[in-house]
Image 1 (cartoon, one colour):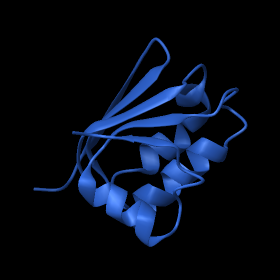
Image 2 (cartoon, rainbow, N blue to C red; image 1 turned 180 degrees about the horizontal axis):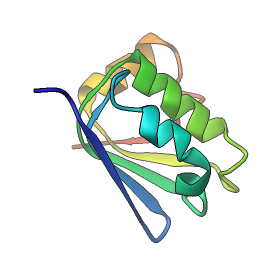
Image 3 (cartoon, rainbow, N blue to C red; image 1 turned 135 degrees about the vertical axis):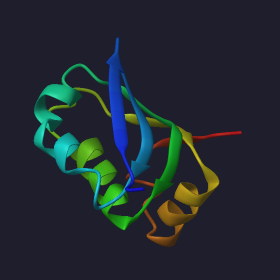
Image 4 (cartoon, rainbow, N blue to C red; image 1 turned 90 degrees about the vertical axis):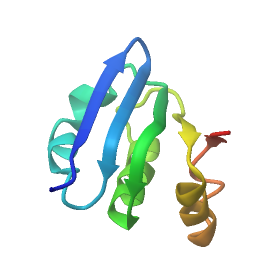
Length: 99
């Protein structure tokens, strides 16, 4: 079974579900301008997996001109938090760790 990624924008939150990996992020990348419009928070609590390509996408999203205000990553799972620390991105990816 191939990995999938779903997203939903509600108010100022973009919620991602599934796997944010190289094979799943092309559609989100192509729609990023529309998807990021008005978004202030990205909810990652429903992601089961994030690879380095997914991490790069999150870095791009937080640095994007589409986001008028700095984006906050919410619901960061321990494995993703480890990647953020491993790549020394704590200052670039403002995040709230999931309990």
